[in-house]
Length: 123
Length: 498
Ligand SMILES: Nc1ncnc2c1ncn2[C@@H]1O[C@H](COP(=O)(O)OP(=O)(O)OP(=O)(O)O)[C@@H](O)[C@H]1O
Ligand SMILES: [Mg+2]
Image 1 (cartoon, rainbow over the protein chains, first blue to last red):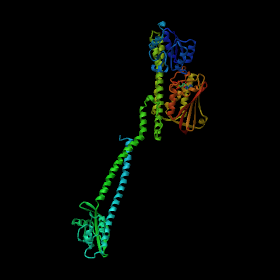
Image 2: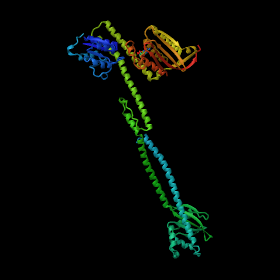
Image 3: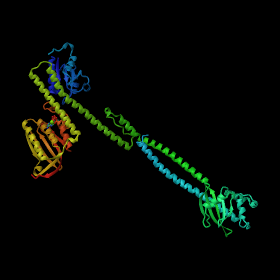
Image 4: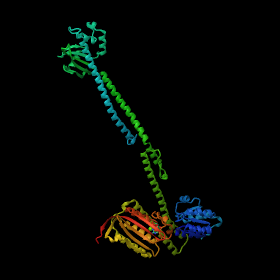
C-alpha cells in the first residue's frame, strides 16, 4: 500500500513519512496541493494524509477534486483543527486526525482503513 | 407601575398639569358663579325694597291720616287686621309675588326709630340689625350679616315719603339657598376634578404604553439575540421616526458586534492553528524517536527540532501578548519627543548591519528639501515601540529580498506629517495579498515555506503606527520590490542649531 502525505509544513511531512515507513508503507510527500495533484494523476495513492490549512490552494478544495477521480483512494484529514471542525470543513472523509494527538492514534486510524489482506509488516 | 418608568413619569406629568388647569378653571368658574348669584340676590333685595316703597307711595293720597303705611305694610306682610278689607286682590297678588315671608323688614325714621316692622322682626333681630347694619340716611348699603349663625344679605335704602319725611327701609333676606347652591357647585367641581384626573391618568398611562410599545418590542427582540444569532436584525418597518433611529443604532451595534465576534472567532482559530502546529511537531518528533532506540545524533536532531519549535511557540505567544497590549491598552505607550533625523540614523544603522549580513546593499536617503533646510522635525512617540515597528519592516525587507538586492530607508516631511519609507528590491507581494498582509498570521503562500515567521510582524507595525495617530501604506510589484511607508504626525519643526 502506498501513502501520500500532503502538508505544507516540512517537519510534519518528515514525521508522517517516517511513521508510515515504519509501518511498512511506501510513502510519497507533497508540499502543496498542486504537487499532490500531479502525483495523484500520475499514480493514485491508496491512502492520502491531507492537511487542510495550506497556502494558495487548501486541502478542502483538493479533497473535492481528488475524490472525483480517485474513487479507490482513502482520505484521512490531518489538521490541527478540532475533529468536529474538521468533519464540518471536509465532510465525508474516511477518517479525521488531530495532529496534536499521539502518532499511535494516527496509526490506529490508518490500520482501521486498511483492507485486512494487507496487514503491515512491522518495522 | 414602576415608579422610575417613563409611563409613570408621563402620567404624573399629565395629571399634575391637568390638575393645575382644572383648579384654575374651577376657581374662575366658582367665583363668577358666586358673583352672579350674589348680584341676583342684591338685585332682588333692591327690587323688593323699591316695590315696597312704591306701594307705600301709591297709598300716600289714599290716606293722609295717622299711619296709613302701618296697615298697608301689615297687609303686605300678611298680617290680619281691620284694614284688610280695603286691600284689593291686585295688591295681594303683587305682594305675593314679592315673596317676603322669610325676609326681615323694618322702616325707620331718620333717627333710627323703627316705624314699621314685619311681624317676624323681634327684639333679637332688632339687635342684630343695630349691630351689623348701621343706619345710613345718605347711601344705599348692601351687606352680609349673620343672625344666630345664619347668613343674610341685608339692604339699607333711604327714601323720601310724602316728599318731606326721610325714611329708611332695611331689609334682610336669607342666603341659605345661594350658599347651598355654591356648596353644591364646589362639591361637583371637586368630584369632577377627581374623576377627570382619574380618567386622564389612566388614559395617559394607556397612551404612553401605546407609544412605548415599540420600545418594548425592540427590547424583547434584543433580549433574544445571543452570540449565536448576531446576524439577526430588528425590523425597521412601521416604526416612528425616533424609534427608527433607535432601531438603526441597535442594528449598527449588532453589526459591529457580529463583525468583532467573527473576527474573534477567526482569530482564535488562527491562534489555535498557529500554536498547535509547533506542538504537533514536537510531539511527533518525540514519539517517533521513542518508538525505538536511536543513535545519539538522531536524538540530537529531535532536540534541535523541538527547540526550534519551542522558540517559535514562545515568539508567537510573546507577539500575541504584545499585540493585545498594543491594541487594547494605550497605557503601554510612553510618549516622548523624538528627533526624526537622529532616530532615523539609528534605524539605518541596524538596517545596514542586517543587510550586510545577507549580502544586500543599503542606503539612507533624506529628501532634498529636508536636507536643504536646517530644520529638525520632531515627533511625539514611544521610542521602544517605534523601533520595533521599523525593525519589523526592515526584517521583512531583508527576509524577502534575495542576495544582491538593496534596501533604502528614506524620509520625507511635508507640512505636519513625516513619511519614513523602507523600500526593497525583493520578491514583492502579489496584488491579491496586498490587503491581507496586515492581518494577523497572514503569510503569503509562496514565502511560507521558505522563510520563518508567524505573520504577526505587520499587524504589530500597523497597531503601533495607529497608536501614534499615523498609518502604514504599502506599494509593491511582484518581482520588483516593495515599499512600506510609515506616516507619522510631526508636532513641530525647530531650527537646527547644530
Ligand atoms: N518586504 C516584503 N516583501 C515581500 N513580501 C513581504 C514583505 N513584507 C511582508 N511581506 C509579506 O507579508 C507577510 C506578512 O508579513 P509579516 O511581517 O506580518 O509576517 P512574517 O514576516 O511572515 O512573520 P513575522 O514578521 O511575524 O516573523 C509576509 O509573510 C510576506 O509574505
Ligand atoms: Mg515580518
